[in-house]
Image (cartoon, rainbow over all chains, first blue to last red; front, side, top):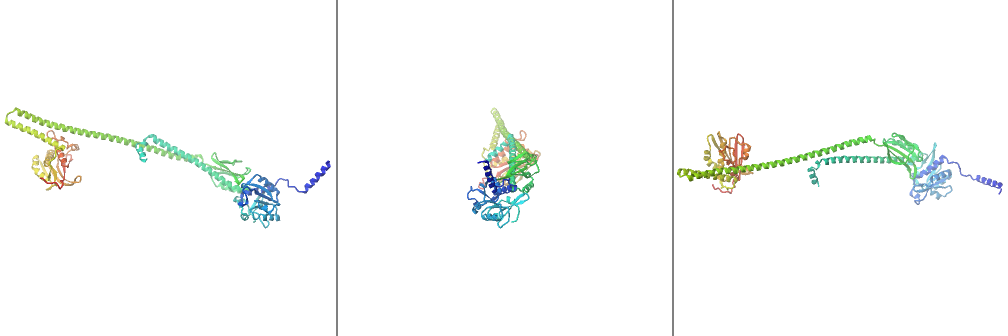
Length: 181
Length: 437
């Protein structure tokens, strides 16, 4: 082929590429870093019931929906780590089934509105520590991130945690903030 | 086991200087060891305490450190300030950056810390513990406490040492005192033994002396009598004058009789001669002796008889009784050269001889009395305080022999210069004995 053909082909592929938005290649924001770090840390301050793990070597599942950035950072933090003796695993659950969702230990649901309600409904009964960014809607999550000035804090729904048989350490509760529940 | 121990103490085991010194030194060493041990224990207790305090701090700040809440971290640290023992405390995050802290003594907070168990630097004990939650490493805490300044500790140990040294001193002194006591006791025992030996020797010497006197006296008297008889016999062989011959014959017989009397008296003293005893009422007997006794007296002397009509019967040899009374009256007479009264006193007594019934016969005078040395030797044969020719020294020994042979006693009571009384105690005859006179 001649140069002209190469040029035409590369243009074609570039156009194609522009049609599909690629993931952001910018550095993760501080907020992303903090949230990911906190989600990872929550795992050490909470105790799951014994039936949350079928076998002793079953992985600890961090499930992320609707936030690829957080998922990436979390993936980096969790690489090679263990939570209570279980190997840490980070999964994307954007298009997973309900059964798959029920197997999560921590679910970070970034979207809002309908999608959020669906996610929360799927994880209402099983002992999944749900983490969201909003308190709107019918269903609630156990932990909700809030902004306090330049910092990220979180609100804990203790009754919900108790109903899900999740035991949250008082050390974590001490730094949780009050919020509308 | 204990008696063995006691025996060793009594034998002066503790008196040996080196044993008490060793005990004292041992006491000091033991207390030094105890002090060292207590020092070590107190130090490790402080280490443990610091470790625990650091762990508690680490646990408290885990949450605030994990979720970037320095305000809460500072709150927990400020609680530690209340504890006066804690001189510095700090919390570092996962990157080793100081989050919050304070230091009241011992210098500023360190910039970076390495994990280490409690260790001593100067006057302060420091520790660095990790802050972790599960497998999460969140940071480090740093704690610094003060240990007792060495001067305070030294003061405390010095005062304890003083007490110990005093105690050791007391042991030492007690040991020395005990040693001295044991030594004194030993010396006392030695002296007592020496004195007893000396007394025994003295008694032996006295016995030998008395024996010597006796044999000498006896030999001397017999010698005289034998010589008198021999010379009489010589003269008798050489003369034919009947008057002279009769005189000489009587003289020889007299010498022989006197010899016999001395023999009799000696035999009485040695109690070899069995007495011819009868039941006698001493009052009756004394009444019959009256005339004989009066004849023994001289001008200016009188005898006073003090007794009831009868006395309890006693089993004695009446002849020997007469001789004894006569001897006593003669002694009483010789004690009163310027006249006086001799008192013969008889009484029944219920607790004279070992609580038995007895009859006491005493002859008392108001004469010159007897010194204790004379009283002690009065009954010895041939012992006499009378001038030469005036006494044979056998009178009281006959009395002694008579009293002893009659199963009684004789004793002398005398006040020097005032009076003398000799008392013969004779046991009452048993009721079943028959009267013979």
